[in-house]
Image (cartoon, rainbow, N blue to C red; front, side, top):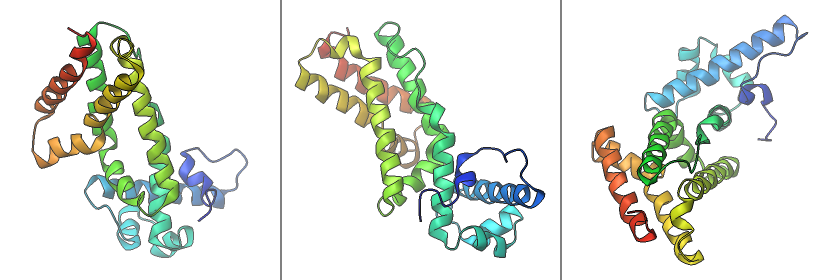
Length: 214
């Protein structure tokens, strides 16, 4: 599917002025379909069928198939839309400000907030990225954004290290706070958000202490 096959559906935008009633209705139906897919993601259905989506959205199955000829295109459009909507969540306000403990706390606040907001979409995106290059590219971009935030947030400590050591520490911080470790701690280990934060804070302190955090 070309990247512009369903531009209005994945943009999250509103119907342009002057669009006739039929086009406006189509846009509302598209948004209802994609919202339904996301709701099913949240409920744990990572591969909802067009039939399930039609029932949830109230849009006829015939219309769902007219918008999206197969399930792959339906899921791709839903993922693209959610990834666009999530863009502001990948910004850490005041990055690099405050003392070490303040920056650790702010960094973990951000990662926990991000996990809570995008976990359903991330689970599906990570699976889809194995087969869909367009989703793999977005996942790679998001990971790069998060890695850059590590450097911004902990620049005082990383700057005290040599380039190779700094990169290793930054990569370690980023890795232990990525989606998969959070998923393992929250879902597989069953830890509370507070306990998960404490585990991550302990690891970050251990990584940063040799860089002069203490």
